[in-house]
Image (cartoon, rainbow, N blue to C red; front, side, top):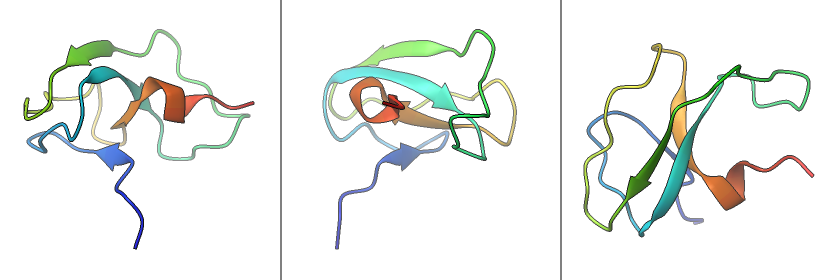
Length: 65
């Protein structure tokens, strides 16, 4: 089983790093304008996203190409 890559409000950060919001349909055609970015330490709790259809994803995992 693979490691979880998307996180919701209240989840704990598995590793330190920069996380950004991603949309529900994670295709390269769907882009979020001005997504929130947060810096987290291991064990920090993820905050609320801008809307209920978004999740948090680590920046290097959120790249398209």
